Image (tube, rainbow, N blue to C red; front, side, top):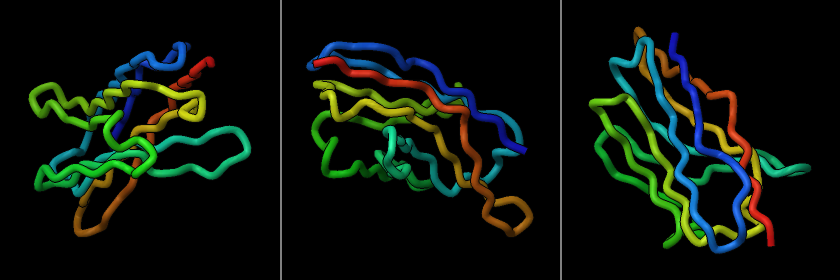
Length: 119
């Protein structure tokens, strides 16, 4: 079992910054990938940024140049640095991890943290 706990969301004005954190624990011996997703009201959950086991990162075009995903292995923490925030970034942000357990790829989610950007 894997547990994910996000923090760092809040209310910020357009142009501001927030840093989301996701502390993970449990059976995390073989991580395939970790990422941040978001879900705005009335919309489907979408991928924002991802980091794979080899360390390569990727972000979606809508946040490219503004958001950065990173990981602190020593602290078992995943980060999402969000700069130049826009009202359209308003959503609940979820941490996600894909873990290999006995040959099966399992996916786990955090509880989500609300990010609200005012204009």
